[in-house]
Image (cartoon, rainbow, N blue to C red; front, side):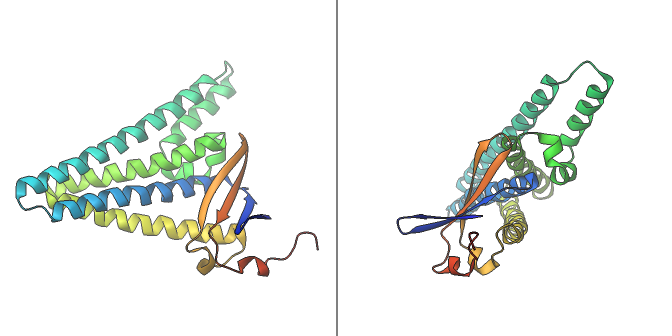
Length: 222
């Protein structure tokens, strides 16, 4: 763990030790981005004066969800191609390749064994986004079956997405607290990014922390 001072900004830099955290980080980050878009569409639809105008906003939201679903599928297809590209001729290699390909379709397996399924850290980030893309698409389709194509579909999807964001965000903050040793209050408004120095060496960079937070962290030189 290292503390960096850049003019008046103080950043905490921590080496990543678990690839699963990168999957989780990207899941919750993607979910927040999707929620802002879908919630904005919901507010626009609510303020329209006619049913036709409202439906037009719902349709725009649907186009956004479909584009997210396409992005998620493309990501998984790309990762599948990477796995197949390194497939060797031995029986052991074929078994390994088959297991990894099957694991890509299992959300729990990816979350539990990301490092073994996905290889490099950038792939873990990609699959985290794809998991959220797929979840949003499934919710949209489910609500379409239940509520049709109108405003209720958009409203229920936004409601589901808010709950999804809250759950994934809470899980991420719990992990971030364990990673940094800081409490949830200090981390609530923190900005987090990740930097990869190589395919398997990544650091978390935590900034926008409350004033004085670093005074409680013991020096590594002591």
